Image (cartoon, rainbow, N blue to C red; front, top):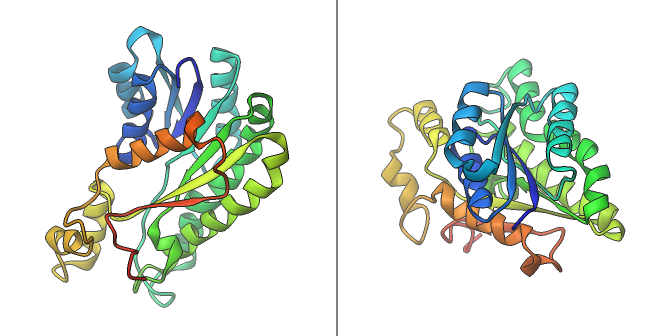
Length: 249
């Protein structure tokens, strides 16, 4: 990743932060973007040795905000090689529980954002034969009780990834997604709070045959591989990184 130019969304914490750090450590110039401008700035400062990171405010549901972020990294580095779309949100409920406004917001943040990111980034990625890595979820590959909006949004990201891989392969642009199992981030706290005492963090860990929750660094390693030359013949893939939870599905 030496001297590559990387844009990471949702990079103020969790998976996005770990990915931004990993790429900066490998010598890339990283634009740390998040709707939380202060937190994004702190991450960029922490990982940005030798000018390797800058921060920008990014609302992934707003096309103008995305356009500004893309212009920022291209203006800074003169190119765009890799986009990692890690921003997302979780919401629980069946179709009877989740209201239309919440449903729309989940799709906006998790799905429409992937469309908008690609729409603004692909023209630049064509010039560098770069790649997009969407962070989806194993929830996009199966059904989960009480998570209809989240699972639907992530299923759409998997499908969109495969379509875009075909659409832009001739231009040398690779498009892949990562489908994590349960990763130990603040999103887990939101899931546990929603379910009350129905299950615990330990219960979630036991759902993974390897016996633990994933870490943000597990996903950062997968993203680093997919962005590298070692993955130059990989596109349209939904890479499952889940401690074995999907092995029996």
